[in-house]
Image (tube, rainbow, N blue to C red):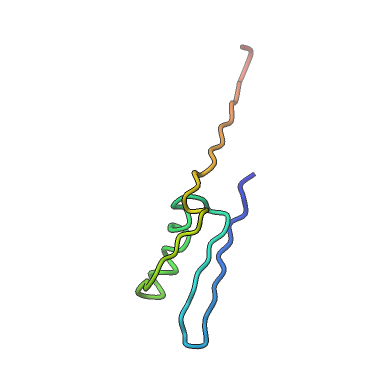
Amino acid sequence: MAERQEIDIEITPDGEVKLTVRGAPGGACLELTRKLEEELGIVVDREKTSEFYQQPATVQDEVKIGDE
């Protein structure tokens, strides 16, 4: 089962929007927020968490059909 991915959206009193992603290691967080960033406008700052530098987990399933 895949890990739960979350995007926290904070809007400050001065109208600044902050996005915080959890559960998306590596560059997956950038893909999750891409559409939101396009709609919101110019990205002023990007702060990468330690999760950004983690390798995404890979899942391999082996399926056998018939007699082997």
